[in-house]
Length: 256
Image 1 (cartoon, rainbow, N blue to C red):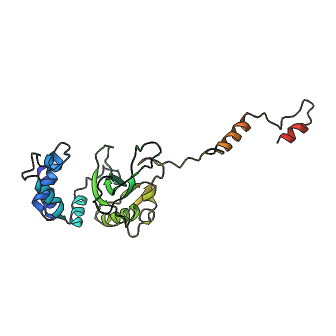
Image 2: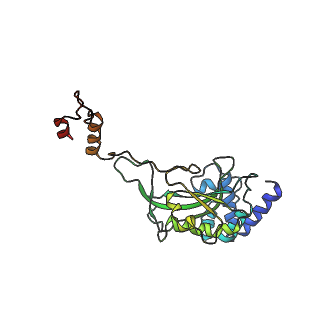
């Protein structure tokens, strides 16, 4: 990205801030330049932050952003795919646990990994649905196109469908969507109305690696069935002919 493109991007980004634009813009720059800030005080010490730390509260509390303008800006500056390659999008939901924030509005139960033994892997918090463009070649960096919090009145499927419906008309080419099983069951992924997306949903595989679900072997999952299956595997065959060649004996037939 050259300096002219960067300047145009920053100018359009500033125009998308409807209220408290100066404070919001400095907070955005501070988040990009501060080394892992843990509080507004540390965020205010970033080199690009010219305001004092109370302005961070004012920016996030009073600031307003025009989501449609921000979405158009991100779509316009989307890096094009390589020649001969297809634009690939990914849609997924990420949890933000907030178990101690009792005054935060609209908390829901979200997935929390690494739970103690015997504890349910859920915590109060927020869930955010993020739509990104997958990089080519593969990298840990992605280009975020849209991000929305999933409220308690909706589901990740409905929010993801709304994100796709708003973004697809802004894209220059027909994309391919990579999603998990939950998002992939939405009507917008299987048969998007008036959209140009091709869904590519992997129910039990990582992104870009589609594999059919594996079936458990017969008898697996229950101790009694597994024990019977083990005895059956070690039992000698009862249909083996006897030394006289007359077939299985009467005792072998009763053991069946």
